[in-house]
Image 1: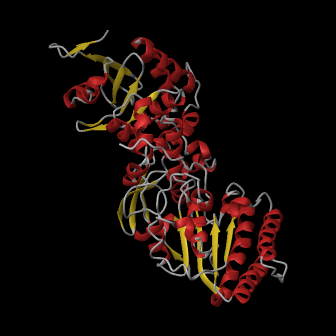
Image 2 (image 1 turned 180 degrees about the horizontal axis):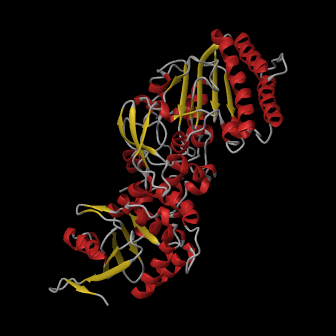
Image 3 (image 1 turned 60 degrees about the vertical axis):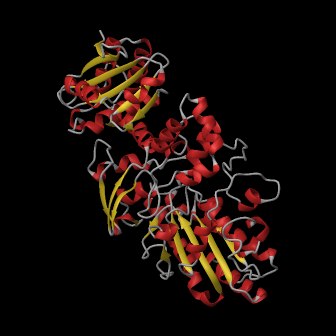
Length: 527
């Protein structure tokens, strides 16, 4: 396998920087999908969660319409594009604009429009963002004789920055609605309009005037335009996967499986599931399976939205939604579209126009339950959630089963009685969140040809294969043995210890342990 490494494009959203001569950055070619997307219409909208490559997509489109052929050498779109035709481009990124107040936001929009006008020696009439936007588009068209391409990245950021302040969010919405509405008055001067954001805003909101927008968020031609498919990872990142496997003591197959569990799983109803680019690139850079996407920022309002979903335990798997329920309306903010556009939920099953939503992968699930952990631990217990988790981890590293069981009981004793719901997933998710918060090497819902178990936890001393049951611990341990969940780790070399835990609903937590003996005796009890 080729071990030559190109540089990881981490944090680079400028297509020119990525592709200029001598840059040597690894680029996953999305230009074939881009060509299909551009053919879908003249007014296009695409929503994807944060850190999914929307800004790079916008930059790529800009370079394409500006005719920068040298940047596309060897890419799928190069022989198909008409390089003899170029268009002036107005490219606005709302992430670069202040949004603390309406006045600051308006001032930054005007400054961005003025800067683009000055570069073309165009005078702008009017004093509002809408009037100057219209003047800029018409001025570029009159000067060049070519229709203008308008690209707007993160179109609704000023609204989402103030979800906790509905009055200010609505003021921002009104400014944006007027701003985008200006495009309706210059249709003859426009070649293409492409707008991205994290949420599908209802057309009666920000796009109330620009009602000809085509929403490609769930369209087949946009399914894989952002994010990496597994084939794309395999083709471009093989050397990094080799290093990841070696650094973490895994086979290549084991590294792939862990990557899938942690970072794959985003799906928009068509095509392949995709990996989050920010998470996967950070994983390759650090050579460890960390929580990278979540650490880049999460709306604090999400935890407060759990009650609105009538899921007090925080279990978001299996949420039912319709196409309309995935639209976000600032006048009536609802939980499901907010969770979906924030990236905490993705489509798991699609039967248009109905969907089943759930956590896309282990990283997101872990991040979510990490945020929920403090909320779970609202009653004073023998130990705090973090302390109990730390004690459990030390106990597993030293083989102290009694200390582990005592800490596990303390962890769940701190959960209010009304949250003790009949879902096994809830208990092993709290357990997983707690152990993850103290740096344990734990894999939730590990899959193999034997089935799916609740968790695998690895220490230097042993590998723990863990199953939770609402009822008897004996049944949990028996399931591990009957399904032989431990077999994928027999070649590891470390002792394998089976842990069956039960009695959660009755608050009589009990743990049973057995160690796998590779000799004729099979399994033997651990005291």
